[in-house]
Length: 303
Image (cartoon, rainbow, N blue to C red; front, side, top):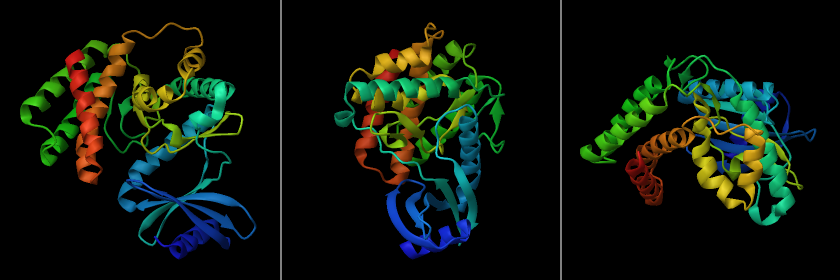
């Protein structure tokens, strides 16, 4: 959309004149803009296709649940169709993504203590079933292996459609997923997982305190191990000392959950496999698919 289109959409949803619009990012499913009203109020506008309305209803439910247990978020102000698109307005939260070079030791301690506490609260939410949607628009399953069987069938179909893997390798990966799911199924419980935790989806203040977790669009009802793929690969390793502070706050002195390594490995394998057709369909750099294949093959060898 052009800046004029965004200004018109924001003015329509907020019912106030708009003084400024600034593009922030374009992702797989969203355009994101900062808008400023004539009165100086600031908001974030996300714009995407109407076909994703069910997914975003689920995201809004996840956002509300997170806010209800004290997780810092950017609250949703309004969501409505406009000019054939879905437009969402969120409160503007002052902060910036964490920078490993700028935080320092105290900032890392504050951020990962806050993040560990926030995820502890998020994962304490008891949900009735595992599902890819929190609004009831997708099938739900009382057991983790049953959900994963359903999810794996859809991922495998997209892998075949995009020729992401040959059939023998795809079958090996699916067998490994099924073995791990069977082993850990009695220990998994459905809870709210954000599933997209990396630096750009966090905001901190100048002292490193966590002021918001952003973008709940990929949040689902998963086992709590579902949180740790990007967290362990992309976020914690970038900040020296972060693991200690995060684990202390997240575990709060409790022992590691049963079969934790296997549960985390299972999620990482499913996510790596899922990345392959996504990367091909979206036309991402081949580096994404190549990295996912490397991770997937290493995880299959461990399964």
